[in-house]
Length: 317
Ligand SMILES: [Ca+2]
Ligand SMILES: [Ca+2]
Ligand SMILES: [Ca+2]
Image 1: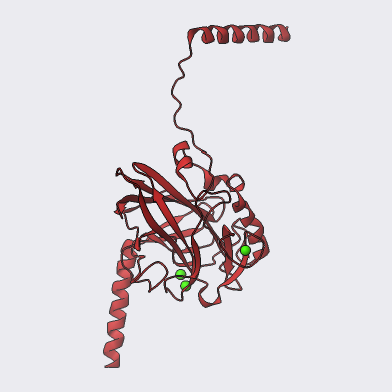
Image 2 (image 1 turned 180 degrees about the vertical axis):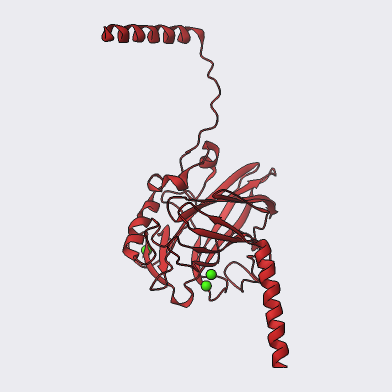
């Protein structure tokens, strides 16, 4: 009987590993950080209740730092809309992973994870498009279950203390020896900040983690976006146990301008204006159309350039 149970369990494990292996996709950065995705990151209840159940849901299953500190997550950084996790098709190209649009609560929801090749962190940009003529309001929940499990301890928060509340836009945790996680839920000055935080998420080797809830309204025929950042280890890739260094490196998340450019790259003017939980500025300009200048201005410009050339020539002489 016992032997049969063991064989059954072994077969179940093989089946589970087979399924997980078939679905898993990994981004390994130039720095050597591994970011593992799963398309079965859902739970049997919600974002902050029940257990990870291998139901549909695209998110990070785990991550390893470049120096080999593993088990940073036990399913993290998925996007739940009105209780349903985003589970559009996952595709990975280089250091960018995208989750294809899926209709949730009437919104076309998609996401993009941009992993840095120079620091151990990523940006998650979730997009919510309302194709209808009326505004749509939804509850967005973003949970991260940490591999630090029952040893999870708050190291620091953006306010400078070790108490995480709605005034903090980021928090840093660890397992008291390694597995440092930095979680950024908004940037100061944002129009929309979380309505609540939780340090209890779905159970996946414990319920320890961090999560944020947003009350998001997308106007008619419009797009709104939520932007998140997360780091592992000491963020700068130098190690995975020095919390003072990790906290020093997390200070970049106090404003958009100070965040490493590898994480703020590729934001178009339209995207920047649609991000609601941060005051982001565009870092990517659309292909500029050839300017059509009025003729008098062209003549003036040509004249100005001409005299400039003459002056240069005369200086050279
Ligand atoms: Ca793990
Ligand atoms: Ca855990
Ligand atoms: Ca605080």
